[in-house]
Amino acid sequence: MSDIIQLLPDTVANQIAAGEVIQRPASVIKELVENAVDAGATMIQVFVTDAGKTCIQVVDNGSGMSNTDARLAFERHATSKIRKAEDLFGLTTMGFRGEALPSIAAVAQVELRTRMAGEDLGTLLRIEGGKVVEQSVASSPVGSNFSVRNLFFNIPARRKFLKSNTTEMSNILQAFERIALANPQIAFKLYKDGVLMLDLPVGNFRQRVCALFGKRMDSQIVPVNVETSLVNISGYIGMPESARKKGAQQFFFANDRYMRHPYFAKAVATAYDRLVAEGVQVPFFLKMDVDPTRIDVNIHPAKTEIKFEDEQAIWQILLAACREALGKFNAVPTIDFDTENRPDLPLFNGSTGVGVPTIDTDPAYNPFLPSDGPKGSTSSGPGNTGEMPSYAAPSRGAAGSDWDTIYRNALDTPADSADSQDGQVPNLYDNLPEDDKKGWEDTSADYFQYRGRFIVTAVQSGLMFIDQHRAHIRVLYDRYLSQVSSRKATSHGLLFPVDVTLSPAQKVLFETMKDTLTSVGFEFRADDGGKALLCGIPAGAEGLDPENLLRSIIEEAADGNETATNAVAERISLSLARRAAIPEGQHLTHDEMAGLMQQLFAGTQPKLTPDGKPVLVILPDDRIERYFD
Image (cartoon, rainbow, N blue to C red; front, side):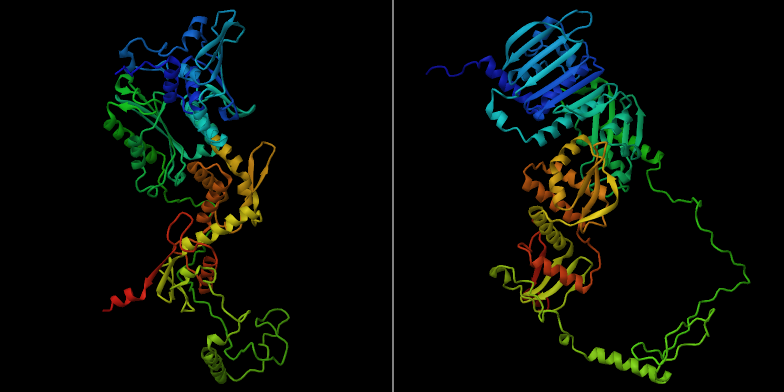
């Protein structure tokens, strides 16, 4: 039997290795920008075309490279960061493996222009699919200029699996935000299809946070600062009122490297016990300075997971630091004793008596009987005689009996004798399939509310319990979704336009959702600054905060990661319905319950919410009877 194991060609091996480092355009930007940070750049510019699929360009004013270094940088495991294995346990740079540039060059067309300070000319290097096409002397400013075109041009299968431009751009912004946030001492610019999208000047950490996530964040965060022999923790955590159900900005940095660490995130969440509702998220931006020899960053291909030698001790330090910050800056609501601009209450002395006001009434007055004279005022003022108007009314003794007679007659009148507009009560189940109608026919003309949550009515097979909140979600969802298709939504205009501050990633998503949002009733207007102003919200959402409503819809869409128009429309309709639906515990009148039931059963799917939760449950007669056996 012949040998079957063979060495792979370098080109194939490089493409396999590239798959671990370069998954999408955002991976390219992460690696190139981190290299620029390591090169000591003070200004980094990123240009993105077609969400990185066509071209990615990263320009920095760092140290640059010599002609030899420029060529050697694209060889696998060639690096200036480490020399021996022990260096892996004392890393102070972003890169160290020597895999990023060869991985990028293996799956794209790369052009590099670079020059070191003190040299008259720089170097031009072109590589396609891992093969050097050109290397020559060229003019170039100090620093490096990487241009990466046609990512995955030689691996069609990988290119086919790239997501939509919206999703890929969101990933790019996420990677860009992490590096820019960790390095406020560096100025950053991000261009999308030739348009400046982000301009971040040099500043401190708090200024960088506000530049990325909006000025309103400045009033929602409190500083954290603690120094110990194990770790120095600095940064900011959100006030309890900044908590949200999802989508909160949460960032950990270890030695200025972004990391994901659920264990430490739990410590921050624990600090908010009894301050926020369970299950919500609070924003935080925390930096940890740790001895590099006590952490290991070489345990994940993307270097986003870090192993700490003193993990449990740091957890306790982090928890104490967050609790101290919340207490020091009065994050817990306090009683307001400020008396300024409060109305003065009159002061009565002990001799002044305060009695209950009295009202003079005439029990003989009957508004349904004709009067013998003109109506007049009962008060005696200028121009008044002070006398009560004269009515042809019975005596006081007879008045009570007349009202008793009217009341008894009203009680004796059968409710069924009242005329309706169309002469019949609409059947709520007419639109149901025949199989679903069985056992659902209404045998009671009444509904009643149970525990402020359920609407209960009798049906042929037993008692039906309807969750009023979920039922309203179902009704509103169907309504909003139909408005998207018909584009005939009703909008409630706002008295004053609301400027909704969004993060860069949210802005990209908002632009793709704008038409769908408009179709369900949102109204927007662009001002001279290019900001989106919210001028109207969908009818039925008047009781909700406009800014929080729009922001939550965008955040849910980002979590869902849908890109197709119908999927975005469904998610927006569901998110809007959830927030506009009547809450649990709200009292409903009989007419409101009947109207809700009529709308629910007029739909195509009254039994389930759009996300598959049950709307109604029937308690069968036989089960009720068993309780009495």
